[in-house]
Image (cartoon, rainbow, N blue to C red; front, top):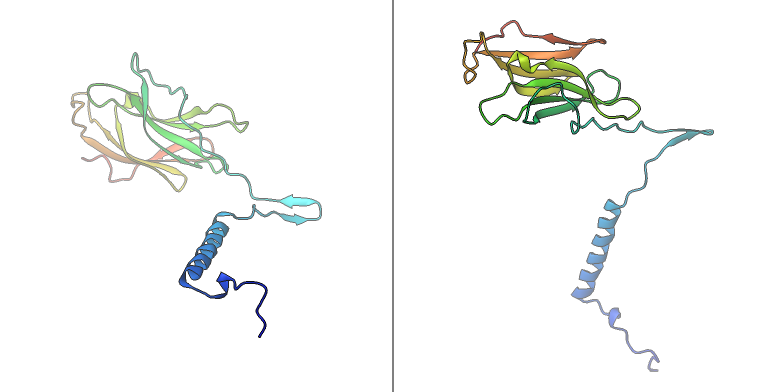
Length: 190
């Protein structure tokens, strides 16, 4: 028998370490393939290319001038929600805002903020609740292109600010030209 000119190679005998190395390499390829994905596809017919419309970000409340007079303290956005309220494909932001008072519970204002179609600075386009209404807003959300909230208020100016005696669930819906407020028939109780 003639001896081979090439010495016996170590990888011709399988050992557990070889299986571990192979499994590690396969796992690395699978992990990499789940991270690296092809770009988004577009459909082409002739020379025309169709693609999905780009998502538009909701306007930020940062830097918005809310119609709220706070004196020496600043206005605080306590709550906010976003959604397409008017069905134009661009989301609006609804913000619950009050003055940053060190004492008591300041009344809330509720404002609809939108951004012009040219991408300009966000601005207030509607006031749903004015701070002069002396209410606190709870249970705040946007559902089915409407703004839902619960307003805690007062039946008279004699009721102390600590203890609102009215609890009113409300909803605002865009009707094509303005936000219309509706209240369930069983409202106005505490």
